[in-house]
Image 1 (cartoon, one colour):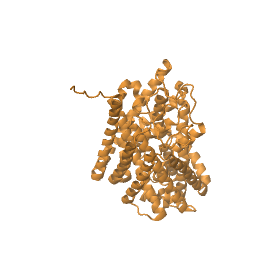
Image 2 (cartoon, one colour):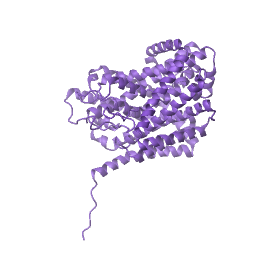
Image 3 (tube, rainbow, N blue to C red):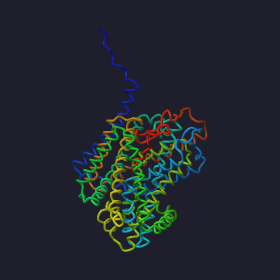
Image 4 (cartoon, rainbow, N blue to C red):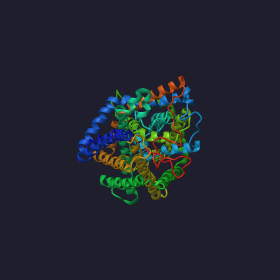
Length: 545
């Protein structure tokens, strides 16, 4: 009786094996970090601190120059001959109207981080300003808002733009899958489908996990402070871990069941709560002072942009830049794969010039307005001699917002409103991150399996827990700075690859590889987090840093 030979591996089998490499390798690396942080938090924290110190001391200059290069690169593309190139077919119109696109960019600019630092950062800079500025003076207040604008303005959105523009161009115009590795085809050719490409995707996933975990940790700490202000709930790591556990269950239910209507309601609620909270503080606070603050701070920001972009302290040895600017640049880089995918998804059909100007300016202005209202209100009270917000910030930066809200009429309502806003951002951002991580680890699949999403949902919460146990807020910051370093190198490669592709396009006819139409395919898009005009029941839910 003849022996039956084993079946030859099918294309589907080989594809599954390739997918598994990225999925299992990235999950294994994160799981090791989780176990280390949970079983030996002190050792994990010490290692993260040592790695952070080495990174900032050895590569601080690199972070500053790299992020400045991203900004220059984006501005150059917008106003060069490449600015008229469409992110899609030449005859393709934008998938979303300009007003809807601006609204979604506005949504992408809001998040846990902006709510957390809206008061705490300006007040922290007011207490410890950079350079030789005297603390707790009018000059310190101006410097505080100027640097807050700097950390939340053009530079972070240039970081997001590099990733989003690369993904959108190669996906919509060249027909590639929505993966970081696929943006390297002009440099690596078909090798992007082999081990080198998989390594790029793994590094993108690791950076994203640590960036999201930092935001989840900040969110849990501030929710704890809000519940303490509103209901007297005790503040501490046990309570924060409980909050992470409860919210994890909520977003895993949403991610596993695809509750599009529920996510749509949450997304709309985010924007309504944020607008109501900012409007209340603007009206109840020193309105004229806030308007003047916005105008003056924007002017100072524009005037000193280059100086702030290249500022290090090699002669004085001060660590202000490492604790603030380098942390922010690393945090934005870690979030870039996540937010970049979302921005790419909503920008199909737009020219590079329209894309860059919109992505750089609209979210930056939103951030400037937020810091002017919340940070400006806190600084005005401090300059008037009211030190309540200062004392709260010194004791615990997560309480700064609630201390400010306590000065206004209906303070209890405002505190509850702010806490609900943070919780809502927490759930929607974690939910979207669960999908995006699943897609990145499943070869850009638009429908990653429920088990993959569940695995990433649990791991991203556990890494947030490990970071909180091993160092609190400083642990969250340290992990972001270290994890972002390798991905920043990948981003520089994306700039070179995109430029080579654009130059090739100007010299030769369009490649035979055709981009899929919107009805055929699109970049990785969460079933709960993206939409097309033909399917209004599927909302676009932005990630929230």
